[in-house]
Amino acid sequence: MNLKNSADNTEIGLGDLEKTVIINTLIQTPIVERDQKWIGTFLENIADANLKLGSPEVIIASDGFPYVQLETVTSNEHFHAFVISKQLPTLLLQGFGIVINAQTEQPDWIFTYGDIANFELNDSFYSDESIFSNHKENVVIGNDEKVLIGQPSDAILPKYIRKQLREFLKHAGINIPKTMLIARNFEDETQVKQDLVFNFTPAQFANEQDFQQIGSTVAWFLPRHYSFLFIDEMSIESGFQEI
Image 1: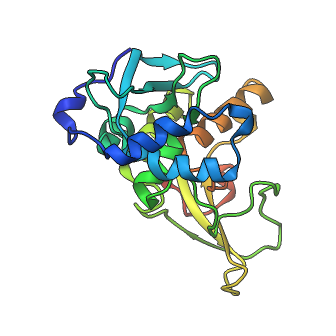
Image 2: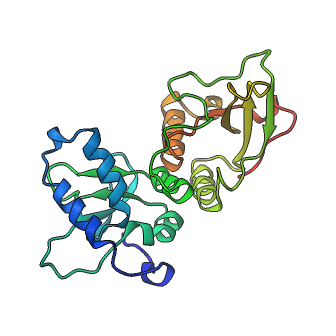
Image 3: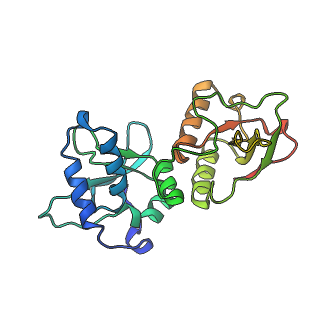
């Protein structure tokens, strides 16, 4: 599996040389010694650093998802630069994550598709603060709970994420995948939370394991701070629209 037409669809050129040096220095630190400072510096510099494609260019990892293999480069090496920040359209349109230095005993970093989408949307691979519900909570709607219903904007679900979700869910047997956005505690701006909602439930699948796998894949396509739940479309009068 290869990247398709990356040279035609994206801005090509060298990355930031200073950031490349920083990344090359960072990866010399043993994984067990990498602390929060290391992680912060790595994430601040990796998107603009010079990397190169591995061989094969794309792999299906043990989690079942496709990742572009990228490797760090040496100072005297001749290579065709791959700069993440300049290749976002290719990555997002083709539905890939990224693995850094998968050729080593343990990869230096793995970005899901949702991580890359978050970088495109928010200039950061991860967002610590948001009005989405806490993932640690069991996201459900209470019987007497008041919610506002609407549609997620392009700032939440841009076309490239919608395309990946739509194609995957149809392949998984959801003939007409739909979504909506709900807001809860909306009467208190300090407490308001939002969640994405999808129009399928465990009852539509052969077993709970199949449903959980669908949920895990939806999560892989979304930024990590997004919360979502599943509701039978017939239980809500209106609000759902096709993804």
